[in-house]
Amino acid sequence: MADFPEIILRSPAVTNFSATVPVLLQKLYGARGVLRDSDIETGLEQLPKPDMKGMVEACKLLADAIQNHKRLLIVGDFDCDGATSTTVGLLGLRALGAVHVDYLVPNRFEYGYGLTPEIVAVAAERQPDLIITVDNGISSIEGVAAAATLGIPVLVTDHHLPGDSLPAAVAIVNPNQHGCPFPAKSLAGVGVMFYVLLALRSELRQRGWFSAARLEPNLAELLDLVALGTVADVVPLEQTNRILVTQGLRRIRAGRSRPGIRALLRIAGKEVSRLVAADMGFALGPRLNAAGRLDDISLGIRCLLTDDEDVALSLAAELDDLNRERRSIEQSMQDDAMRVLAHLQLDASNIPNGICLYDPTWHQGVVGILASRIKDRYHRPVIAFADADDHEMKGSARSIPGLHLRDALDLLAKRNPGLLNKFGGHAMAAGLSLAKADYPRFEVAFDAIVAELTSEEQLTAAVYSDGVLQPQDFSIEHAELLRSAGPWGQNFPEPKFHGRFRLVQQRIVGQRHLKMVLAPLGDSDSFSQQIIDAIAFNIDTALWPNQQVDQVEVVYKLDSNLFRERLSVQLLVDHLRAVVD
Image (cartoon, rainbow, N blue to C red; front, side, top):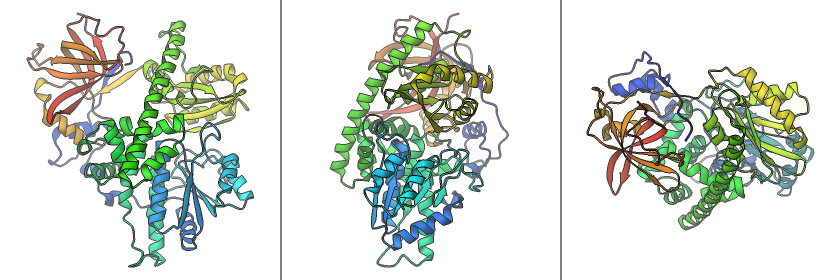
């Protein structure tokens, strides 16, 4: 758990909701820029039409390939978005009538990210008539050129931000490419692929492809996968993504999800009927990502693809084992990093604007999680590096609000020609590679770029609160209302509250989780007799529960906990400190 931040109250907004929306939700939605009933509608009919730049060319290309029984090869990415994008592409194309469609995902340790010339050479052994990239490709200039040399056309579907030059693909579908009119720029890779399938179905329908013998598929059956990939990739949950996630969650809760998703939920101990978006981000996503981080994401794709419940459960168990191993590696790396940072004795006067960390023993597949943990602790953009080979290192970066990482790296690269071998990513996460010998120079350059592009206010840890709840607000009704009011996520954050509580009991559960019993402070500045369970994950065990205090100040989420068929109120504590009068 990070140090206690400055608390900023969310600003109220004038809203125009109907009386059917509870007052509490009107306040919460308004503070997030959602102001009217139409902003919270989540029916599929509210989705924007698939009018993306390059979509017409892509659908003609795919429809011709399907009708002529061409061999299609999907090249994916090695994270959860990539796994779900690949699975959606395979299942969707087969449902639309593709006879020959297969997939290939580069092993991150052998081939790196995207459609590289090396992975094109591997793909060519399968003799594809068309390569389709999912969740990658927008920066694969050399890979697309290599495929063209071999006579293999490439269709790029991606959501990452394009660079100054685009690959010479036959068609590119990416809502973030220049001149694309599609309004929802925050789609994950799986969302882009889903939209391609929607448009392709329309193209095939116009061609008279479907008949009594070849039924038109219901592509909504893929929405469980779309929801999982969207949440796991931490893309902003603007309305289009909220619709996709809501519809996918409904399918999962109703028991209409893929066997692999059901198996992962069972392994994670999650109640299907009460699933929320956060469960996909914290329980399912990491288990799929662990395969790509430590081994091969194909294991996760096979889990999502299989129709056999027993096979799905077996593969989910393997993914769970990998995730346990990943957590062990991550903890060891985090301990290493914290020792280094403790030795530097960082405080407000000497903490770098941008933090770079490197250890030759660190695992290349886990540095992204490490960067995220250190970012949360110090509220600084962080890049953690590991060895790629004897001469090159690879870094994974995580940012804070206010600093667009990909743009920052682009500026750094332009000012320091040749310093970066490769880079790409989003506003909040990015990847890069550079020569080991250049690491000291990069560390200085990154700190300078962050200093230039951020303000002191942006580098000050703060948390937005929706206010203070009174004792009567700690009810199952309120907790259940908040659970059902999402999906909450990136740029549409789950409600958080703050306040003082009497600390009735405290104990450590697991290895680093603090279980508490709290009594809330009421209007009269006295503590009520009501007691509430609370839990804080990954706390500093050097302080808690050894710290003997009567009162605490906490920032928390109001939740409900189902245990032995009994629902009770539970606070999920994000920040905690002792109150000293």
